[in-house]
Amino acid sequence: MEPRQGLMEGPAGEEIMTHNQFGTQEVPAGFALPKAAVKLLNTAALARWSTGWQWSADNSDNPFVTIHVADPETREYFKYTWHSRGTGALRLFSKIRQAQAGAPWVDAPSVKAAEFRVREVAAKNS
Image (cartoon, rainbow, N blue to C red; front, side):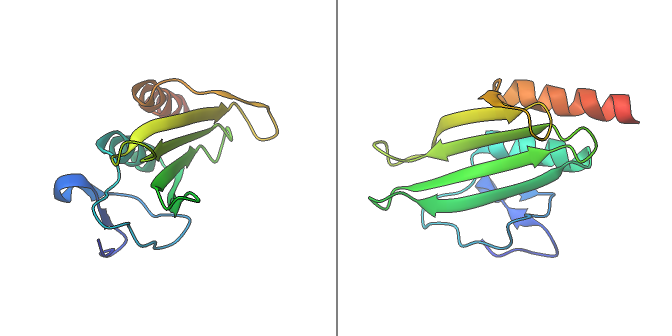
């Protein structure tokens, strides 16, 4: 999956319309960003939120990916991790949210609810 003019290819060739704040990263063979991750990243990018994703592997070389979306104005921050440990396929593993910079991290809502929140904040800011 090579980046093209600031875009990156997601599952089934779907383009991610965002800049990865963590730079270009090699995607593990046989893996792609989950569709829910792509949808949240695109929703956040359209709302002018900061976005990024990081691929890594645990000590047993099981790939995982963490996506980050944050509103630069309110400093609200969502972080979701999908892991392949034990399944061989990416499954949502953890989800945390910070209401503003310096606030405690708490359990985040579903990815779909986070998309709604991104759109809600964008509507208030426009």
